[in-house]
Amino acid sequence: MSVEATARQPQPLFMSGNEAVAWGARLARPHVIAAYPITPQTVVIERLAEWVAEGKLDTEFLHVESEHSALSACMGASALGARTFTATSSQGLLYMAECLQYASGGRFPIVMMNANRALALPWNIYGDQQDSLAVLSSGWIQIYIEDAQEALDMTIQGFAIAEHAEVLTPVMLNLDGFVLTHTYEPVDVPAQADVDAFLPPFRTPSKMSLEAPTSMGFTAGPAHYTEFKVQQHRAILRAERVASEVDQEFGRRFGRSYGGAVVPYRCEGADVVLVTLGSVAGIVRETVDRLRARGVAAGMLKLRLMRPFPEREIVQALSTARFVGVLEKDVSFGHPRRRVL
Amino acid sequence: VASPFVRPYVRPRSPEDYPIGPCFTAGHLVETNASWRSERPVLSVERCTGCLRCYLACPDGAVLRAGAAVIGVKGPQVDHPLPQGEGRGEGTALHVESRRGRGHSTLVTSASGSVEASPSPPSPSPGGRGEIRFEDLRLTPNGAAVRIDYDFCKGCGICARDCKAQAILMISEEIKDVR
Image (cartoon, rainbow over all chains, first blue to last red; front, side, top):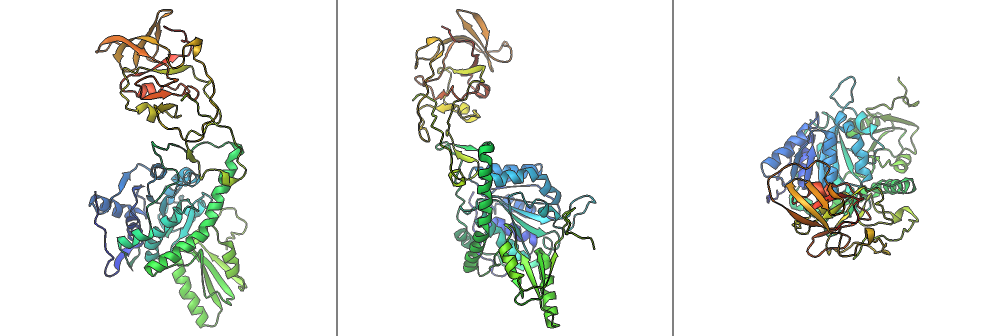
């Protein structure tokens, strides 16, 4: 099946964060999408499934029975050299927990959107970052997104980062549930040809092939296991530099870039800095401006990456601050610094 | 070329010496491992259609394509004489009285009479009866599409179960000297 490449949309399309992710995934031309719908991610999957059904997207769309199966199917396809995409949220992400480590350990460069949503109990479908932060150490690169345009662009960039030869690590794109996934904004949709030029086809180092057979997902005993984990850790650390390079290249080609692992806003000489991540950054930025107008030396430090964790940039950006606040929608139960006010 | 294709174990010196993730060129074998087998697969060249299902199904890569290039460095070959002095390259001839039901064949040897070769009991089924010659496949018999690496075959029998042509039979390792 050949699909007509879409031209750049003459004017921005009005779409939700979810639809922006779907557009980004579509333009990245994944070979395989395997996903299971869950609120508030459902629209991502609906749009992609519609495009496949309408012949607008040439992708093997696997209707799986669970999130565990979704990520497992992506791993299998990725091992064969396919570019793969999936999306989930909350309970679905936790249902994938076993596969998350499997995918990162297998060095399968899958890109997954996660709609940040609260975890049960009590049951709650609304925005909260407890889900992705609960799997912080799963070996995935974690990117937090602020708006719909960034969602589209970062879905494309996500593949470039994940598939980079120095990285080969899966990427999780986090969008705040409802606040970002369901908010409509004007979004520029780039031309397919430009995305193709930015994102060349995925070349896996270990393709399954009859001519050069490989052993996939083998065992490593205690003598070798740690070395594989060291390699994995080094690769995800390298992702901080690679993500920054990918973003700069994207900026050169598309005129939009989002900064590196952290984005300081009016942090120079700031007395008070609020560190945050995700969609709330927009409100914080406005608050910083209001405080500055009133003579308070306020600033904001937005984290775009939680893994790899940009420690050096954070320390540097906060070097002048006397007061630092951290705003995130989660709690690490039992952590002594998480005081209940 | 006789199997196995073992190569000397070289201890990696740093994490950089390891493959990226647990996927790597197959056949990177440093020792043989077949001592747990209680049954071994034997093949009928006559029945084999060369479809390579067994090659794809074998979980250990112990079914080799005849004439396929071997990936990697070929280490010293391990000598593994056939049981009871059978000639290498000629295979061990087994005269099999076959009932053409799926997976059901009865081995008949002149020495010990009937030996049941399949895990399920033979059942009457339509089709012809005849003598089929099955062979050990240490070396590729003439016309065979595959051979089996008995130094790595663990005797699971998946190849025999998967073979649509019933060209593979699992026989007990106790059956050695058969004519």
